[in-house]
Image (tube, rainbow, N blue to C red; front, side, top):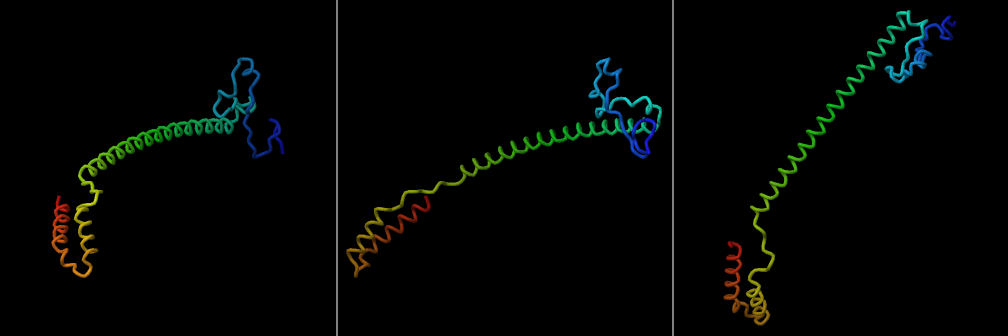
Length: 151
């Protein structure tokens, strides 16, 4: 069943999204209207249902716009806070790393008592069956190593 207003079946609701001749002559654009809605056709303007639907649509668009603004502001705040926390964490990490580097003693890379070590090895090779002859060198080597550990 169609209505006298032009083509809408019963239970269907159509909003006019066209520009009127009055809008075209005044240069107004349908894009300036919320959601691109032009004013209702004069036939529908007096019908409370269509006026209420248009008002509700405008209210919903305004609410969506407010929420969009709110969430964008929240996102900006979160991003700023995240950047601050990252900067602070990075700074604290570098400070802790510098402190740790300064408190930890670097290990010696060169061998300790290498001269005595070579003498002991030579002594052991020269006296395979009389190793006790190298005991004085072994004691000196032990003393050298323990001194190096303490220092």
